[in-house]
Image (tube, rainbow, N blue to C red):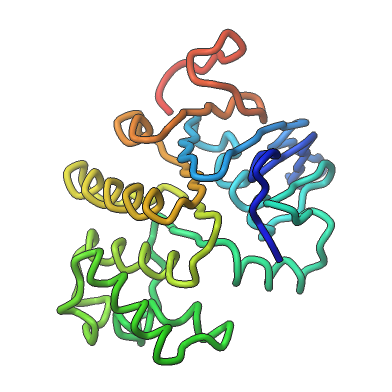
Length: 242
């Protein structure tokens, strides 16, 4: 399956609507949202807590299903897939970096990074070599057999980045990847992530509360009233802390 298209945007969302049930009523989180993301582009998404930023990543990845609208990643219409198809699509084409790392505590650093390859039967010698190369790139070549509880927060997030990249995904989604790190460590982790993404010409969509971190992206979008707009554009009316 080819995910590359020289003309069309790499990720396209058209008319996305997503509701959640709260008691007796439906609450709209995403409201007729349209957005496009180009291949090789890094985009930061900011907005108030509860504005739908994480929901946006979940529907792009297929972990959540929109109530209306179309999502395309490359040539694939993710929104038209069934549960199994979306799961297989994620395994091959999407990497996810979480705020809380989500490492498996009973697996070593190397085993955690190899886990996505095991899901696709690629944890062979070449896959192991590539995993070790990534761990070397994130500065953890000497910690292959270490378990997550022996790592600092910054080290855990670097393992998580290597794990998200090991299956060579075309799309990387990051949900507050620096949210549990101090600013200095967070900037180091962010610089590393954006450098690796640029080297492999991957598309990165990153949710963050921090404008300091967001300014490292090619562009910044704001989530406002269930839609996305360019930061500073006339249609954006975000006030107060994000």
